Image 1 (cartoon, one colour):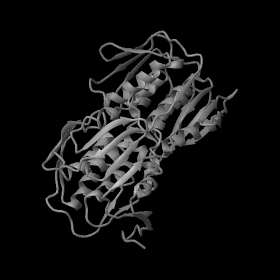
Image 2: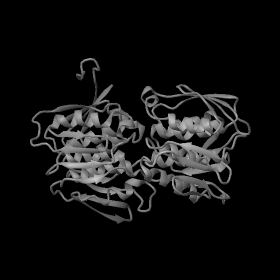
Image 3: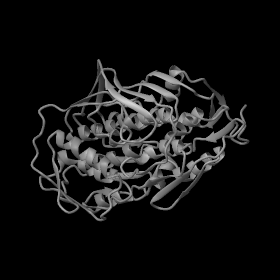
Image 4: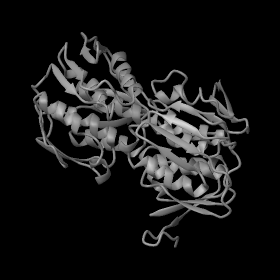
Length: 434
């Protein structure tokens, strides 16, 4: 396991090469696959989750090739009788693929990393079983596809993850008109992401209409051609808003003003010490180098952004409060425990219950280099890098390579913007560097 050493960062500047959104890529791949028709996608995420999705499509027989900047996907004339897939830690990939595999004329075995096996999936499997599909209850998942089954009703518990609902929204191309998804709970986790999926599906002719927690599929207007366009990742852009808030970034982010990504509604509305404007090159963001005010807001629709905001809040003028954190325990790591353990090292303190996180900022900065852990979580790793904007000595992040899940080039991008960093090999038994 490698350790990244990052020198104190006082200024990052330039054009940021953001990755394509893996969230959007996986939704586009999912919708295209459900049509069982050829489709094209301009701009594919290089994150591991999306790469696992591409591998899954290839293993079931899709022909995939690149035409200039456009990926083309051609379904097979006939599917294999059986397929074995490995999806690593790709939570979105797993949840979006399961309903698709359940509808294909094949037997599928799906293995995942231990960390993903511990994350929620049972409610989606239960909804599919109740609708008549055959799936095992434990990993590796065994799925016996039923291509002739087109259920008209799903009962779904989606209070732990909106991806369960998104997964069924994406299945619209083969569901019958009038198919209904009934939510068992009044609370829908991260509703903005479910809404983004619904809007994507509707843009291509499949409309889901809600009435008192019941979603019904309306008559479809199928597109003559199915071609998707990727977007730069607003979640990845969020780290640079964090650098700016801590006084260490000015430059362009290649983001779109009209985006389905929920973070596009968050970072431009925060009262943090940076300013922004739209330009031909993209979104210009610049630190105003003022003090960081305490924050009081809900992150229900953008829970991944909490990691950036919590690190920024560790240097605020007073305590900050973040509501809507109830999905955080079901992510790639125990993120609240991870944040508490790592931010304690800089003198901050965190308190939370099932709904709210309070961050009490540091009163004095540490006077020596510090070693942090990424906890095997790409977003923890990138969020901790922001500490270099305020700490006076180098910081080390053990396991920093896990950024490959969503932003494989993050450390290279920081170097290109002016950061000084290097990697060492870490002795995992002693925690030392060798």
